[in-house]
Image (cartoon, rainbow, N blue to C red; front, top):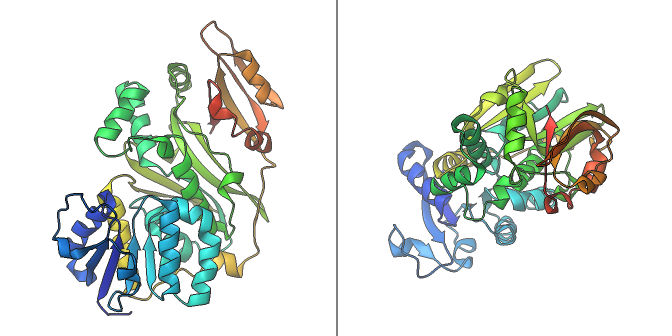
Length: 395
């Protein structure tokens, strides 16, 4: 495809799809054109001429003039079917569906190798921050120690409004929804699933290891209360929803997605609004910080454009960590310091603290801070959302 014009078949024309269309109009040097767009709703009013749209996926798969498929749809199952069919048809693909990738990335890596086609997905992680390609190209060695940060712009926007403008959770969420940073059903963002899926993808490129999403703890901010905000302020911290993959020995890594009490001397403390921030730490280069917008159509559209441009130079991921270095194993055999706020004393029986460092009791709420095994936390992760509690990691 090198130096040839890219003719794109696009699946999905929502916020990101329209953002990509507008970005491509501005980026004339990309030599890329959307020639066909596949959508489902025949009755929805569109901003483009009717002839560019189709309702039949095969019109894209079988069109010999289309040399790149870009899929930007929310449905993970439909996304998987599109990506698989495209690769089997010999067409390179750009995808932004992080849930689909988090569950199918191993299979799709093997399919790329089998078919000789490429799948790029920088847009699936961190919006406008090119974290995946940097992990592939710049951090393509075994000196990496950790990747951690704010991977979801919607939840960070909500937390910024709470801590900077003293807004309540519900008010901040509503504002995020009105601005298009959060969906009408915000569970995917605020309960940590979006960050989890991005972390799974990042881990493949950072350490060459695939970890199934169901095996990793993810807990979000939907149960955040005034008592938790007050505690954070008393400690001189802010609450941020952080995703973290860290190397804990020569052959083991651990992963988690949890709210954290972040002190002001950390880079992540100052990441506000819909922005993402990623801290990459290595043995020789200490810490490096990447920062950029993480929510909205244009930031993600620009990341998709970067993948499209990369394909014009025949770029593909080499999965160097996966193919060239000793495979790292995922473990939950590590201790963390955890804050648990609760009303019902019976809820504390869920948590097998090894050591308690702080306790508070009142008629309205109580909390406990202590050391707990990550393995024990993973074991109860499905029970946590059912309880009237809030948990957060001490940074």
